[in-house]
Image 1 (tube, rainbow, N blue to C red):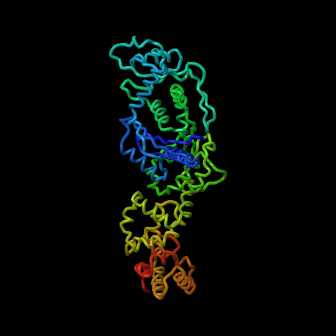
Image 2 (tube, rainbow, N blue to C red):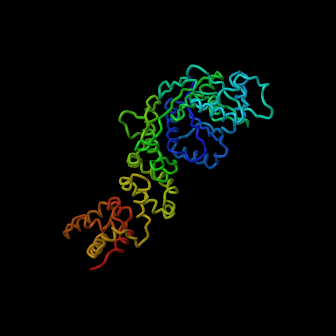
Image 3 (tube, rainbow, N blue to C red):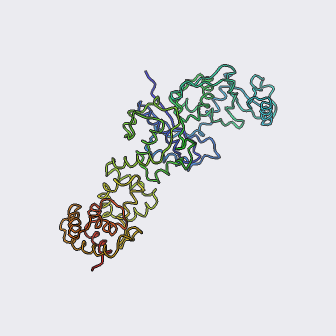
Length: 475
């Protein structure tokens, strides 16, 4: 019987859920869903000085917003300290680890001596085979693993292939500090084993850690999980990803108006591909994703590509679903709360009606909000500079005539109002744009908007005529 696949995402709560961590979580989630397994969540909060409840909450919120649900309750690494200590002492009892009584000063002297002799500065194994009866009084020991002295440790990695580490480079590292707390290297192994993790998918900056962790697994006679170390995300210039490139928290992408589905799609394509497919539904990604298809090379983050992809997702999204996500995102968008406060039932209905036109021109929810601003503008509208420049005396006179003709429309629709506007343009010898542009300025206060006839239909007769007359002058 095949063992069910269990992946895990294990962030440290020392800040927000950054974009690299989000992609790691996504790859774990996609693979678990692809094979019908589970993804667990572990909060690696052993660094008590840097770990905060606020950061933990931000990570959970970021994952939830992205739609990356985990199985079971989140596990606190710090809460398992007693178990980590128990395993470290068990390793001593098995002869696979030992107590080391070296003082910090002695360790530093070892390192200095090694540097002077041109060797790597590391612990020299002083207490590896000494009798504990020689222990000095009053010194609290650490516990060190007995690393193999010869040969090599091989990590069979699903992404990187076989990676070999000479054992002479892997010293007897500490697994339990003198205060009884575990090191990261040790806690991770114990937790992954106890949680039943079968596949470890993480950044390739952990590849060296994998060699040391394999030593602990073997010392405990535990099965080593399948390893898959995915390439890091670089900036467009190939350098380390910085805030300028997009190394921001997931919450920042929500505030920039990106859809969770689009961000999932974009992150999945950073280091993984399925043929030439660029735009994917979540269901397709789950069906197609396999860790063996992840590239070895670093992926490059590109804001323009992500923005374009987000626009595609917005246009393809069902209007009702887009309306719901737009409303849910408003508290996180600049100007969003003020916009929401002006949405009475009538304006909500107008927003729903305007959405098909609005989403055709927007690449983000921020742009959608900006384009929808005309719906909640109070009369008389404030004109932006370009709109004001359009409204010269000739345009205002034309608007007065147009208002009179539109007032006679019995059934107010995009089609009926368009017929009136086109008729006026033809009769007065104007190009359609010479009528439509001043009309757009009068209705929205701007020179860009969804289709002007859609705007007339959405605003309705009373509001449209009121806005036009506000800018009109009689000859």
